[in-house]
Image: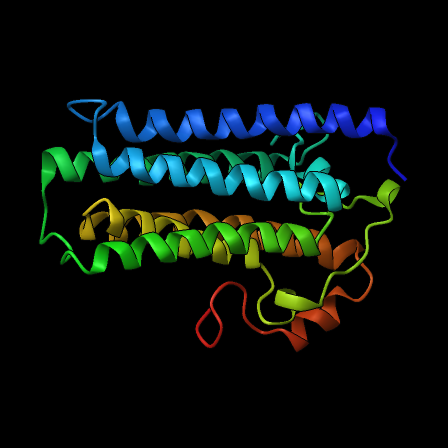
Length: 236
């Protein structure tokens, strides 16, 4: 049971994490742009901030173990070298895919712009991705940034809810969040190429994660047999 003092401290850490998250996304989207007054991006960032803040506060109040795990730094001194490299690769790929959107919209202008009616659909898809991200955190209190067996926290297999459909629903949410954002910001090129960049970075991380869990998490081998798809049902 978490005390009021611990909850207050967790709330402060959560707000700091949300602010840092929004600032980083803002810099990645607006720094490559000719002007910081990019109306479509500002609308997206406002919605993103609202959804992330709402989801984080919900977890803080009702699932504090989940948000506490997620607020851990994406590195540790005892982190395996392979996971360190995979994490750096994933973070770099994520930043690259985001930066690709303003570069295409304002500079490259490759391909067609999405039709106007597609843009709000993209916004909805991206919002669903954010919702899926927080849903996966709600169901899995062990989803920390560093791949490890959390024996001190009683690490147990999570195979219910969305984890009964795909093995890595948090990563699945990226493929709603990112292309949806790119469509709203009018870059079909980024929606396609950026998604390929993300999947190329996620594959080594998934391999390392599953290898670690197979070695030390009871029931994980059976889970791999029951849930065959990693990210996308019926496909991968």
